[in-house]
Image (spheres, rainbow, N blue to C red):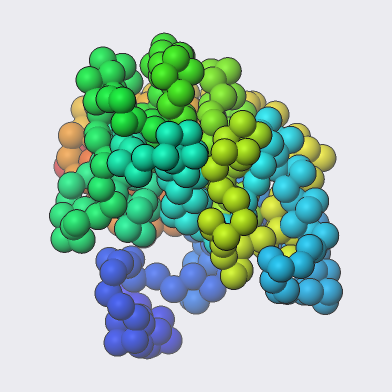
Length: 402
């Protein structure tokens, strides 16, 4: 039952906002730690973290103070000038990724756009042709812009907006032969998420990663990895590809690198940078502004100072254990899969009702497709938080099978 104030906001939103989301009937007002509070003061344990964005939860004191300090200095300038936070953030980010050049964007989709442009410019510089092809994966998700949508491997997302960017071929994740079948003399890049998110929480397999890397090196094809959701410590490494020791030529990241401030980036090796995007080839008004880059810089500092990745490595096995218990206890749960604090429970029933019941009981979850419960909590959760989540989800699953 909604109170008057909440219903007023919901009604106003439905009148004023473009209806591109089917929202849950909750108006969140504030957050603290790993909890959210709605307008009525109801408390919710957050295992969604704004789609894997709020890695440090809410009101992480040192992060908040850094942003407040930057507001008092400079919010925006322009990429026609240098600014200190962008320089600091770029140096820390490229060190964390082991890559050489950084371009800051406003979002993950824009990071993918930049990665695609860089790959095509690299191939054009090499041979002067403009008909190069990119191989992406079925069931992938890379964003909603026209370029990012073109490499998103779900026809349902693409069909109403065609024709999109051309010369895209699709293969199957973790099926090397299907990738090889799509390779031609025009192939300039292979792109995939190191852990597929929207497609169902599917981590790449080590052999697949290694064989793709070898193929790319053999044929001068660029490997582009999308670490937008799975990056920034979520899997127990700063970036998920570091589990495999398979380094990309270009990497897209966003979400948690800004801790809630809208910012993304794509990074590349020096070899790619020398032969791809030069002056005038790419740009952005807001990308790399002082406020956004202050967020990135401080997030990277706090990850190191507080050993956030070490904490993920400690708590993730416990989350896996409790999810495995749920999978064993309920016939409606087919399997658990994932990496670190990016986990999914595949169900043989639609999960929308389960998510709604969890919300009623004070737990925020989200789906990945119609039948997968997705778990992407703040990276600072504790075992006690995992137990609290499990208790609520257990009750929701029980009611789902009655």
